[in-house]
Length: 305
Image (tube, rainbow, N blue to C red; front, side):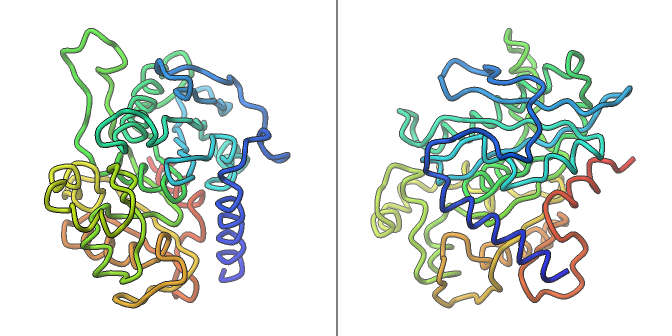
């Protein structure tokens, strides 16, 4: 079990190192999508790919959001965050999305990737009949920034607008579950600093540049933090989540990789427990691991009757 977890995390780290490079297409082991380059919005990055699982009845969906700091990466890194072959074999269809980066003109910048993810999820639900999908069984997966986006979807109130003239906007943005790798669970710089003193991530999400400026401007952007930080959104009606990290936690101590530290996971798990939300945390050396990777968790949750 331990060796499998280590191997999985190493594959994720390798994928993150190369996330900023221009995509050369899907990996050799990834099946060809059933439908490619489907537009779900007006921006050139509002596109997704879809793999249809063979089934006579509507299938669950794994909704995959790539990492890259909301500044790079692409949907073609799908296999860094979930195993497409295992999902399809289990009868779970797959969607992998691109989204606008934080270089957009949205205020705050992080609104662009997060609301794009929600729109893509609503779009997928609007295709339920045509694509043979079960709207009530959709789980998100992703790594790093894509993991943060997945948790934001899991914890945010439903963005459906039943009065909208747009049929996509009428669809739910809620999830059945989320299974993520190396997630930033908060976008509050004060929490980050307390949990991990050498934190340096997040200012770009709000257009604030350096972490020092991010911390200095915190009071002014508290409403934004309350809206876009996953930790701030957790309530008792939220779905179960799964978090995996590559190193053990050390709360209050500097980390080699403060952006992907399991300190994020420990604090979110404690918060979820206080709200009655199931949150499974995995890192090397942790005993009694039930699911060794996000794919196993997704299959368990999405195939549950």
